[in-house]
Length: 116
Length: 107
Image 1 (cartoon, rainbow over the protein chains, first blue to last red):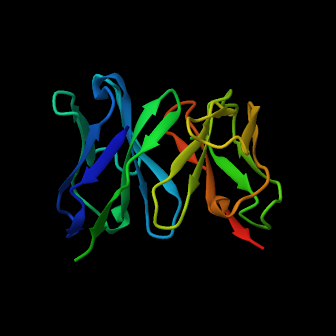
Image 2: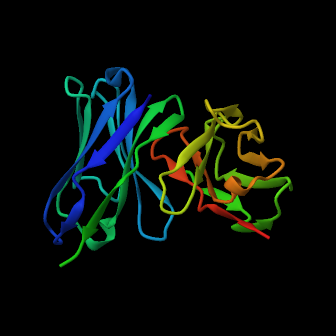
């Protein structure tokens, strides 16, 4: 069955970097676009970034543009989110999701806390 | 950016009731609309895509309709496991945006 497992979250100081990973299994990873979505504590969902199945197209929310970078390694069935210059407002649970023409399958999420 | 507005923000209902949640887009999005369910402390679960297409494994008590700017999610014969927060989401173009959520509570 489809499985997405995020990792790499934790507590980090403002201005520092963190890289999240999303390990995919149970489907042909290289055939699907992927997304990152986050949810601040007690808040709603915020889309973060998109990457096409082959990595050629990438889109970012304005709130993370220039600081976050989405990438993928299809040989390792893994999606990444490199997060630089982290701010307190980036504190959230980060979810990866498989996207098939609007049909999304979600991972369980990883918590990122930005605090001094 | 396209703004998604859900109503109501919260809703109380009883087991066995039928409820409807509405979602309005600030501009036309064709049928590029999804509905999600989220329970406390859990990841979201996608229920419906393309405004009315039920995702695999989702009970037929959930149904969606609409096109353009106005959409609805209907849940019939409410069951205890349906009490959760529901979000609409457009994917017509980037940036993708979500509604603010509708919290469905047991009366």
